[in-house]
Length: 125
Image: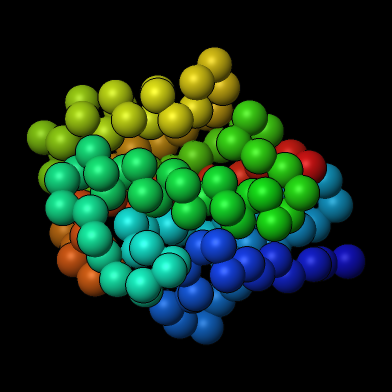
């Protein structure tokens, strides 16, 4: 059985996909970009602020699914510029705290809405 997760506390999907799906004990979160769900706009300018907003959005989706950042087992971070790696890492470490999920980080040519970072994750309920 697959459960669709949707919350107004995170941005609406920009295409034909769900914010997250729950299958058994796992939550599969779609990539989150730094859109403010209240205004549906990108308000963060720096890569640090964009990373923080993307993780806040992930956190809101996880909460709607009945879990949290502390239960994330895997993330994938997409960055527009690998020169931002250290800045992204700083905010990522701050936001995840003692949780240290397995992770991949890749540089991509372009992200939706021309943002600097997108983050997806898999968590346990």
